[in-house]
Image 1 (spheres, helix red, strand yellow):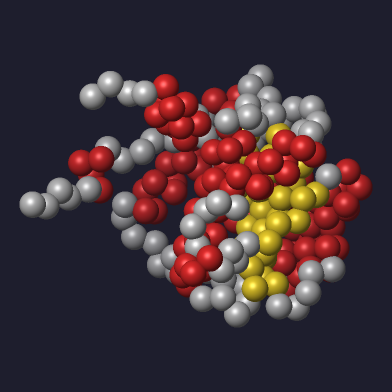
Image 2 (tube, helix red, strand yellow):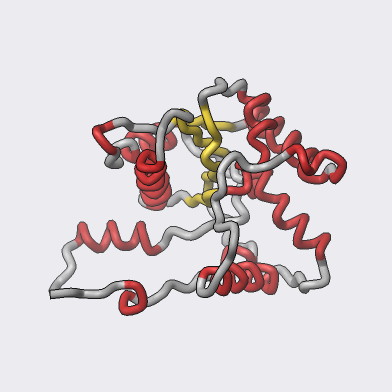
Length: 231
């Protein structure tokens, strides 16, 4: 089968998507952000509910949020006050999921020269999440609390659309569940209404490919490992 130009373009956008952890300071045009979100809103959702809401942060408000979350993250005395409202990860890890999780973590730390004993270095690297890895644009996503599990599945398709649409414009992203722990800080800074729950954050900008962490290539299971063809 010969691939069409359209197939190649779409495939390239999907395959080249990576979680970027260091960004250039180059500004992203508002028109590009709006177009990415407009295109992404074509994601399917059950009975067209469109359960997503997006807060686009730049400049002073992004800096303020990053500063306040970083302060909460580094303050051991208040750590117990910050707990996720929903479980993103399993409560009990089993193979192969724990193996994949550990591998990507240690691969990243190895690139950065962080050993297992360097707890402070690992904490500092994780803390870079809250600066959106220095991206010029931070996105925060919320969902109405009344929505159920199906709408969260719809939300995932919307988020994927954003990441792929960004790649089509030469931009990069990093989806970030790390923000969910600090939903109280986010609610205060962004004045979120009580009915909105924080889904995740996302960094958006241009990758700094001079940073070694951006050379990380995560592995994927081959099709034969997760697909069963049945006739």
